[in-house]
Image (tube, rainbow, N blue to C red; front, side, top):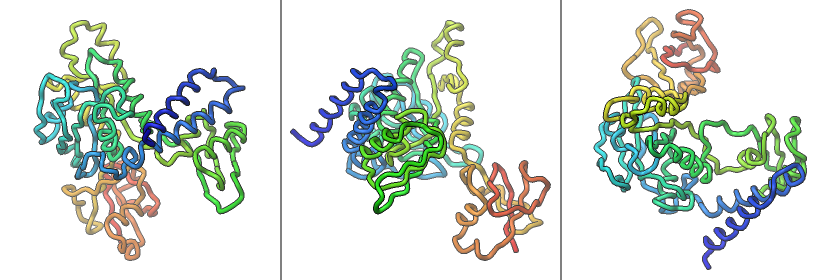
Length: 366
């Protein structure tokens, strides 16, 4: 029996024990240990591949542009059609499963930002266990900035199933990481700093040990709601990503009441052939990526260069902008002046800690 087969057997046993053990206050500690063991085994099974590392299993993708987005969904939901609509790619389109056997990239330009869109092979139930190109697909998802989940009007329930596959592989969608800081130490065993009383300390210590921690200070930044979030906070293999959800082929729905039931704030109803939902898709991808355009001024009284924006994350500071321009420039300037919607007045002087905003104009000087 191979190592992989042994780990899969252990995973199966623990999953059964979790299902067979009712969850309540008395069993919370035991559930925590079981779930921590399960998380560690799944990490061991995946190796570096699903965590964005090597191993020769993932697709070799050359990323380009300012950000990368992956189209993920069931086979034949219209990923190739969408890709062809919004980019310069030519992805084969067919009405049978697994039309796309490789990864087809295309470049979408929106608001001056170049966004690489990757059409992946259709993901199916069991992908986390490597069914249907599972691990190859998951490795590309992990290396990207945003995931687009797609299904069609006849298989809406699959959205939840696809999300479950991603969750089982350690990908967390539209959620922030738990605020748990781990300071590893050379000695002193495990010390817990939890002013929010999330769990009994024994639970935290035992879960941490199962996750491979022995000497460390574990500090909570807020109350942790459940054991799964505790495990996520202690794991190094979780990937937190923005997600956009799409239901395609809505032009085939004749019953308006059925269509109304599909409408939700976080779901795009699309018919790529009819150009329905395309503009909303572009805008939601833009918002999900959390990018902003920063326009630089060469001279304080000159117009900013609007043709070549600097693309930054929306939580970046002007100090980050300087580092992006040049590692040496920070020593050459000591003032920053900004223009735009979040400036109190045109040419406001701000500190380098000031956060960027979309379409900010900035001049750095002495």
